[in-house]
Amino acid sequence: MQTADRLKKIPPYLFMTLRNKINDAKRRGVDVISLAIGDPVDGTPTNVIDKLAEAAKDPENHRYPTDEEWGMLAFREAVARYYQRRYGVDVDPGKEIVALIGSKEGCHHFGLGVLNPGDTVLVTDPGYPGYKPGAWFAGAEPHSVPMLESNGFLPDLSAIPSDVAKKARGFFLNYPNNPTGAVATREFLARLVEFAKSHDIAVCYDNPYSEIVFGAERLSFLSAPGAKEVGVELNSLSKPYNMTGWRIGMASGNPDIVAAIAEVKANTDSGVFNAVQYAGIEALDNCDAFVERMLKVYGARRAKILQVLKKLGWNYDPPKGTFYIWAPVPKGYTSADFCDYLLEQCAVVVAPGAAYGANGEGYVRFSLTVPDDRLDEALRRMSDKLSGFTFA
Ligand SMILES: Cc1ncc(COP(=O)(O)O)c(C=O)c1O
Image 1 (cartoon, helix red, strand yellow):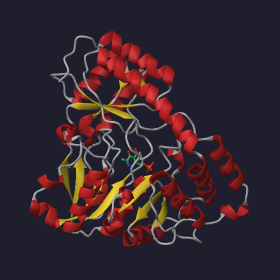
Image 2: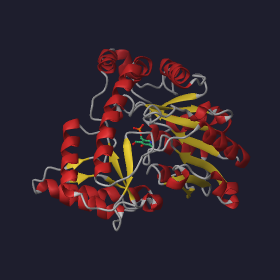
Image 3: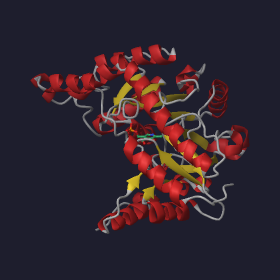
């Protein structure tokens, strides 16, 4: 059967090789602990679940959610309240917000709604693996922008070659950053807006970890003056409220980009189940305390991992965002080699940095979304097996 050439552009998934190795080990009866995936295990807040149950009983919500194609106005109004309360940002629920099936959908629809075949799109390297397909599916060409530790894992905008910047029509990036954990600053966001304005680039600022910071400022791209003239912010209920399976998020900002995403969406799916949108309103309005509690849980797990890594000789102070720890591998190892070593010696799985791009080589990513007892066990195994390494 012939399948589309565009699919051939998608590189072999490094996680797939790892997944095969994990499955092999499990088949052999090994008790594997995964610290590789960013998928919260602590459960959705009960008030959100209750709201879903209540809304799911109403036959009104059993029909296509297409009356309000951009998402229910009530949901968009909750998004606007959330942005005002948490980030001091005004967004108009009438024309600057569209509901999404998660921010991953936004990356894809941004590509189809904003880019033309042949356009150049800037993507950070390392970067979230959803960005390049967002460009490819639109027929556009991604151009990697390095994100280096020496620059706080922020892209050096002045180092982007001027011929590339001139051609570029879009820019995918996210802070707090998956995979590095880096956070943006107001000053960086201001420079990003200036850069985008001066080169007529549409920014797709993907911000699903906006709530997950440790001693850093919670920031929305839309808080930068002029941001709405150049881009949209994708956000999601997945990570702050442990709702990855519910599939609900939003794109907010530039009305033309929001309308373009909404048009792609209207011609692709029929929106988010209304009962899930009602539950989403509950999360956005009434779960600030839940987020604080989760930050304490992640903070404690983060401290535990860092303490063990430090004892093992990793002298590394990681950035302050997301529920990931991005750490250098020992000298003499590639990220894939070190992942293999951890799997074979400790039955612990972490994500290889190279899976996020060439500049991710030399790092691995630990996720804090693992039950405490499993994390303790993983760290115990690592403490037993990993002493004597030299870390860069
Ligand atoms: C940077 C980034 N963007 C988007 C997503 C997808 O999130 P959602 O569940 O909202 O689709 C993830 C999930 O891991 C992510 O890390």
